[in-house]
Length: 219
Image (cartoon, rainbow, N blue to C red; front, side, top):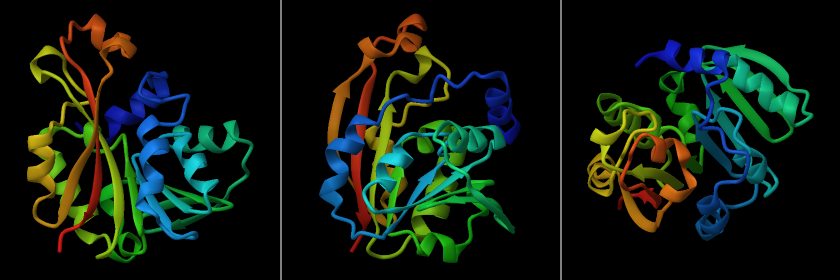
């Protein structure tokens, strides 16, 4: 799976993964992280997620990263925001108020940028990546976050053989293995959401759980 896969999905409007509401575990559990006002929060593979608006409304500085220029442009247009644009080695930076989106590859984020993020909200990134990319992604991003970072991770757990991803199934065993080298991943939420996901029902998936984790740097 390469960048063109996602760019084509946005061009063709095949963006069923975009939510028109705030992610429920974000509303429920983010306040427990107790990040200070003004903290920078990374939202990897952000698309045009409304979760960024929710975070920004809580006096946090949001840093989204997204490959698709269409997704970035739609986010600002649909929310009535007029960004300033500049370019760096990481991509094009769109900035409006306390929301910044880098139109580029998450693997191009440099160490200084990642060290500047006190928090991370990952709903769409880990589950979007095939198995062989998840380890490199976690090492690159989470391995370079600051020592006291706080994070909230949302994954899906379903029988992978019953449907092709993305989104992929990333169960608790895999989450623990991926993060063990540098972070703790505390499972704080599990909910059966199959009745709310017609795509999975149509594919014949027999079980679908949403999982949420509180992430912290390991002592």
